[in-house]
Length: 584
Ligand code: SER
Image 1 (tube, helix red, strand yellow):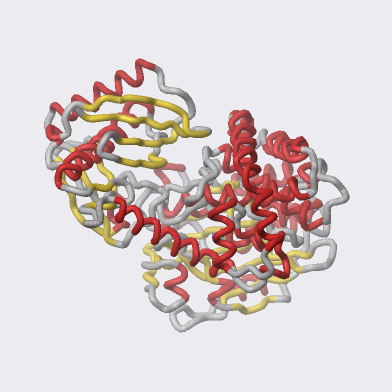
Image 2 (tube, rainbow, N blue to C red):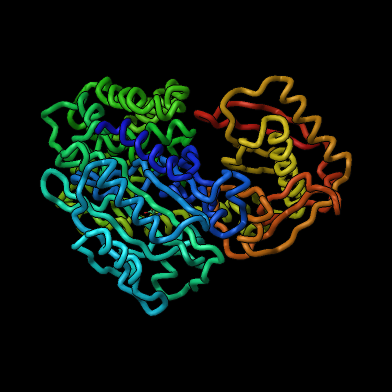
């Protein structure tokens, strides 16, 4: 079966069982505590916890989707037969609609009848101190005639939560064989029966509590690439129709692992670029930079024409464009950003490679220095330096990176006159009372601006960055095109109306989850603590003009901000605009 046929079959099968088809959400989730969408269930978290009503939004308790996902945790495995960073996840979900019996029967029917494949084996939860063994699933599988049922523990067959907290529960997994006869985990069927009040790491360390959910839910996820591998009877995911066309432009002389890495990394990068991510040293941009630079290093070392990698990107757009039209819409931006990053990197890449050659042994400190001076990321140092760079792990490298960030923050403080800073939140800094007053006014102006932009340009406007000096505010946000002069004028009108209406500005501290329930705007790149401050601009008892998660500080009344003027509106990358504004 072709991958297009599989996608269609999956959606139709679950639609015929009363599931509403829901489109994939963005790769950049609303949940600020995670960088990427890693699973289909993420966009449905609030239906499991009862914060949102599936009947109202989907006219059904059950949904089905094909979700774009990225898992960077697998990056070191890419090159083998079954791992990738970007992948499509086929999933069916239920929010209090059905439970284990139906979930397992649907999965079994889909694999054996619809796909005509046979199961290799399944796993069920063996039980832990807090959660009993899953006897029920075992019985259901036995009744279906499955013989090989293996029991496993928390690490493998207990899913979630994603982010700082969320739904989670024991799972049952389905393994299929590929052409080599390897058993490959293809489908994970999760029984969401708990809310975990901490992260997965905390849960595994025994530092988080499991609270039974009022309504039990089903969350399943099946990797399209792996299912296609079983269905198309190939030896690995790269030989399926999802990857073969992307591998085609690559020289046959390259070793197989390298070709796989290039195809995988450029596919993930193309999807990230289409979402407006820009290569940088932070968060999502840093992941994108690493993916691209690893591939660009291979191009440079093996002297192949730049056309080859461009052809891979064009194949991604061509192959995936029908299901993901954003790739076609953003084609020019994708190519421009790609060559932009390529140009930047090539200025220093050659020198960085020489430095790697010169060194006889490379530890984490050296590796980080090479990144800081020449832009060669961890993966490149490992790939290129081979034996010389075996003495450190990714965690060692990341620790050096963090150390460096802390030092440069301390450096920024020193620059402000040796007396230390009165204020340094990263977003705004002030050395004395006068500066503090100015940046505080500009900070409130930033919140007013964001609310006004969402009013004029629509609710897709999301904060991508903010930087405030005593001179001006700078605000980056998602928006696909240049603002028209009318839109700028309209935005200024709303901003200054908010100033002249002298709205009070207040804040309240509350648990993060509660703030999310209020629909507060959060800056997705930030990691928030459990207790957050919510700043509200607006009259008491009326609908708020603006409400954002924020550490402050802010003025107490918008009249203190003074007249705001938009000085400049420009692009900073695909799908991201930047406004500079000043206050009088
Ligand atoms: N959330 C589970 C997973 O990602 C099932 O969808 O594996």
